[in-house]
Length: 110
Picture 1 (tube, rainbow, N blue to C red):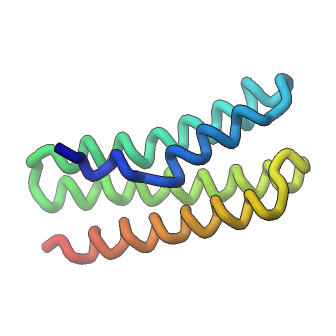
Picture 2: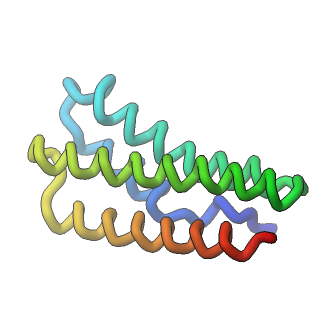
C-alpha cells in the first residue's frame, strides 16, 4: 500500500544532499532543510487521512509553504557554495514540479 507522501522526490533528495554539508552547517541550514522537507510530506500525510476536503486543502497549503521554504534553503546553500549548480538545478526543478502537483491537487478539491 502506498501513501501520497511516500514518493516525494524533493523530500528524499534534500535529505541526501545535506549529508555533504560541512559540520558547521549541521545546526543551521542542514536542520532547516530537513525540517522543511519533512514538513512537506508530513502535512500531505496528515491532511490526507480521511478528513474533509476543506481540511485537506488547508494541509496542502502548509505543504506548499514548506516546499517553498526548501527552495529558499536551496538558494541559501547555493549562495554559501554548499550546493553545486547542477545539484541545485535538479532539486529546484523537482521542488517546482512538486509545488505544481500540490497546487493542482489543492485546486481539484471542492
